[in-house]
Image (spheres, rainbow, N blue to C red):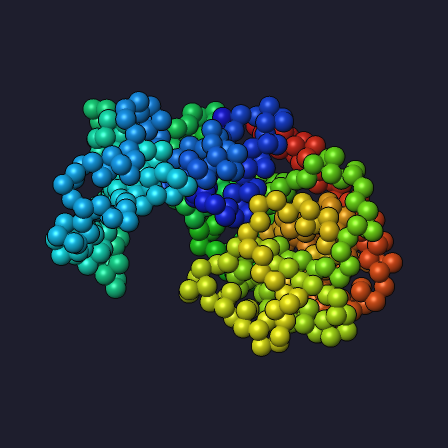
Length: 490
């Protein structure tokens, strides 16, 4: 079995989780059994996985021990929670005692999600989370709303995993111990990494393969295992803080490479593979893109005439590393010459520092009276029609690990203008053939490049005509062959 190790899934999955879903399909097509493994419990995960089409393809570390899928008793609903205290007043999904709420019921997607239990002073001392009507886990708080204990229950509603927390700096709850009970055995772990290593030992056999996509979650656990499955680390972004060979290696990547007993490191580009090998020559590096596009798409004709003239798109998280202010500023200048220009940004907004980056970008748009032609579209599950209609994809990131957006755009015959950064754009974008590369962070040249392109729509047509051919080596059959070769190399 091949296990893809990640963090969790929510309704706006990141590029890493999207890459894993696509890899599942690739492995299915080459006859390699595979499943995704998540480290963190997320309430309402069944709904999310179902929406993503992978409800039967994910093993969560906590659910593995809870075995809630084997529960065959009555399911909890808002009505059953209400019935536990029939003498109390029920209003707006709250049970009231002398006018004060003592139970607050929360529903999501039409089913019970979690329930808050309040003490006589109004403090929430317990919150119970439900999965498909089954009580999954509870959190217990002190009177300062600080987490103290988290209990995960099995299908008999018995605690199977208990996590203990104590106050750290700024009185923040810190996990200090995990207690696991399985059958007649009890285990105690002083760290999450030790618990995860134990889980991986329970899950795997020596002839399995662990493909780690989130080394910050699983890297330490790989090195603590007793079993010896094959271990691969997939690098999804730049491996150093400055995206250069001589830069400072991110701590989680460095620790995983040095202590994770890795058999292979996988990167999406040859440039990053070369740079990693120069820093860590003892671990073999392989080049396999984190994603692929269907062979059929690469041979499908997408007429230039059906595109929306002057429609520019960006497909990126609204976060600081994507430097979307550079793109917005260039579009604002461009709009002064081409009033038809329209710019749409597709990607979820980073909540860091209270959505600080989103607020800053919206301020730029507002101050320049650009709200009519610069739009924040949010996370969009299916971008196929977007790529087919756009004139151009614009990428202004500080660094990348590959850029799925560039590959997707080119596969739909949509030209690309990108900063020339590590890693990916300069292996995908062929200047003067399928788009243009611009020196990193050179906003003036970025604007001048866009001006030149939109002054000559015939040139834009030619870029689109070559785009699909330029990424023909990244069709599913070619990427499948790379995985098949690697998986059968030892």
